[in-house]
Image (cartoon, rainbow, N blue to C red; front, top):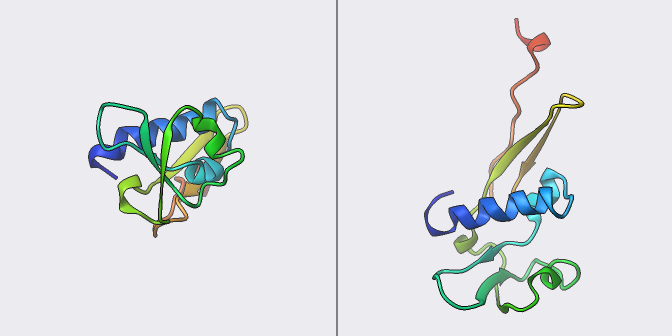
Length: 110
């Protein structure tokens, strides 16, 4: 992932996890949104995002629905580490190839 959408996609993923309580796989699918400029409230959103609750979060924006798998939105993988439980949760964006592979716990190391 890189370019214009990188900061937008990273922010959306963190907001989905921290503010909306999604787990990493849900956050990876959570609402691809893109704005290709700095002005206005018009944004592109993928047609895979359902009306409720997905698109409802963007009330007040002018949504331009785009076809699924549009490269404007970027793609990503992530691993979230829960310090309380020592559990690692992986997520891979279902719109693209790739995988999230957590580093094994030390007891698996030789």
